[in-house]
Length: 444
Image 1 (cartoon, rainbow, N blue to C red):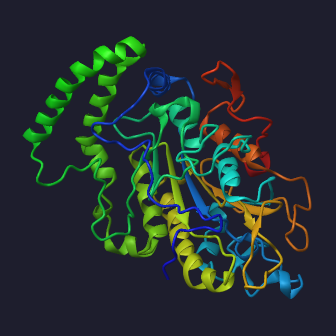
Image 2 (cartoon, one colour):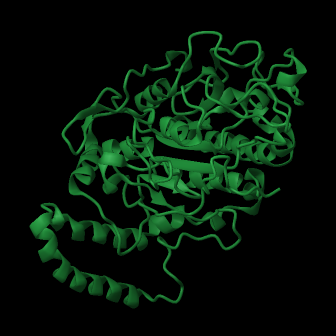
């Protein structure tokens, strides 16, 4: 079942300006960000080398129907779905996620999660950055970041591994996945294509078949000639203009990198494995994410739409969204584990918020930030655990709550990044990577 990627706020989440796309003629980057990441990559003394796969369920997943069912609640709350046992005693999830239930030992659940926003744009920003949207936030901007996204922080602090980009978004870049004041050097590489498409390729990595190598080199030479006229003007107004040619060379190197071409070639996977992940956008995005972290990408953000189930919540979940997530997520955890990658890959699965416990008149559920569940596993997370609990109707946490700041602090801790470290805005104001977040030690 195909669902249009439009949301109740009227915003179309379609293709937009790819700030991080690896366009051969368009890397607008800054030198300090790259040098910091390269210095870390060269050897900072950290023993951690963990990658992140951030699975964003865009629109807001109904966690009362997936991760935290309430079979004893009144019918107008509990809904149509029943819980089933998992392979971990005492933990139950939705009956429409049977394959995922068999891998509960590989991930855990935070059932006492909450934050203060039930609007798409501000909630998206909060989940992607661990900072609530402040005055002046405009969700229609692309990107709309007032604070750096997780992927950009990771790219700044840890840098790339070889010629592979450190931060990749697929199948598209979310509007809140940008770098903010950290600059374009740590913006994501946006694939902007569905890995499930039969003719899927990444045009910024793989040159057209008709473009011969000598023509590609000729274009690089032409670019250098154009730059001669550009540099004199830039030098007068931009003290970092001398870095431009460095990054344009990096763009060219990326486009011609065998490692990059191999990483993005999803067609190299067997039909059997692609079928297991699921021949849909969610499943193939999970498979691509595994390929990318295996190749050295530090952060992959999957933006999957459309979980905004104001109407026909149970029909849409049962027939479309949950079968895709069940196949893709279960296979991702199994595949990472089988390849010895799970301990070095943190997987986080969440929407911007949950859905209202009370079912509305259209058999749907509306936005709900006060209480929902986040799933996460790998990268140092102990599987088969449930942290916290919600109340009898899943309306709010029944114990001490956790929020985006705590999730971010835990994630950065596992990646070897100090969440209390400060960045500086262009105005020179220090801003902590995470403000008042605490590591959720019950998961470790």
